[in-house]
Amino acid sequence: MSRTKIIPIPVLGKHAVNAYLLLGRRPVLVDAGTPGSGRMIRDRIAGHGIDPRDLALIVITHGHIDHFGSAAELHHLTGAPIAGHVADLEPFRTGRARMPHLPTGPMGRLMNRNCKLHLPADPFEPGILVNGETDLADFGLRARIMPTPGHTAGSVSVLTDDGDLVAGDLVANSFMGLIPGKPANPPFHDDPLHNLVSLRAMLALNPTKLHVGHGTPLDPQRVHRWAEREQRRLAARANRGRLRTRTTT
View (cartoon, helix red, strand yellow):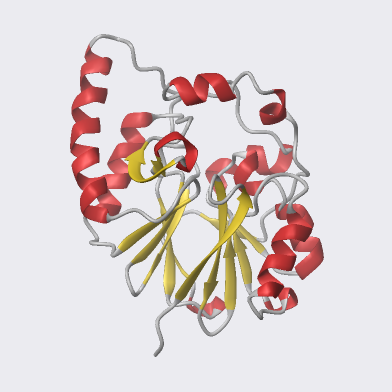
């Protein structure tokens, strides 16, 4: 059986915000961009020779509007069902991320002042509720949805049988992709330590490449070395009582 092809769909800039088109026996879209980007994403799917109406599924990695912002629009445009984790149903149903955002550094603090970040998206109800590891064979893909909580309570990643990990905001490129290939935290995490546990669990599965929501693909070995340093940094902050978290389950 042929390898699952991973095609980035840029939503903002060259790679500041990405969705991904996964091509197996049937096409699957991972993430749905920012509000108002649905038609652009549909057209970019078509530009790769795929009829958007053939989409088998839209997987939303988590409840932030740069990832689910056009999910309702894309569902309307393509007819594809939406899969999302039950722990992020509140953002999906309200069109608003849980507040306040908890910045991971200067980029997050800067972005938190942007009023566009706090605009609502069109709400939606996932047709496929994820509550654990979920095989995507019925949707034509040799892959699994893997719960990876921490960034949000309902964060998920998609791991193909070939070892590609479409990781949402489990990890990012530095400065929203401005420094390609350099692992970093995304601008926000609900629970940085819990997210790091999820990241290390995925790295233990020996992925071949990490395809992220912000930036270019990351090398697993480089991410592993970064995660070791990040573990020490976060532990020190936690010991000093300087690590803000929103409890994730």
